[in-house]
Length: 137
Image (cartoon, rainbow, N blue to C red):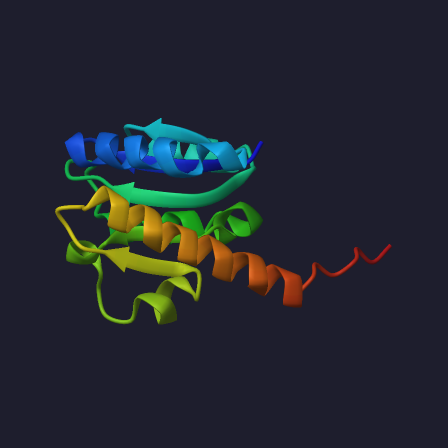
C-alpha cells in the first residue's frame, strides 16, 4: 500500500495530515499519522511508504536523530524524508542523502505538501534512472 507517514506529536502534524488528505488522497496514497517515532519506524518496517514527514516536538529525540534511525533501517530507510529546518544540522543532503529536505517551522501545511510532492517526484525520477539490480543466485 502506498502511503505517506506523518510523524508528529502536535497540532502542526494534524494540520499537515489534513493538507495531505485534501491534496494527494485521490492519487491512491494513504495518509498515516504516527504520534511516536517508534510508531514511524514500525510502519516503515512494514514497507510501502512513499514519504516520511517528521514534526515531533517532544519525542525524546530530535527529528534529525529520528531521520538518522530511518536511514539505518536498510532498504525501508531509503524513503524520502522531510523534517523541520529547526532540527537541520549542517549538510542535510550530505548526511541523509539526496532524498531529504527541510521545511520551515512552524509548518505551513500547504508548503509542506508542495515540498513533499517535489521530493516524491525527484525520488521517482531517481528510481527510474537507477532500477534495482537483479538478485544474484
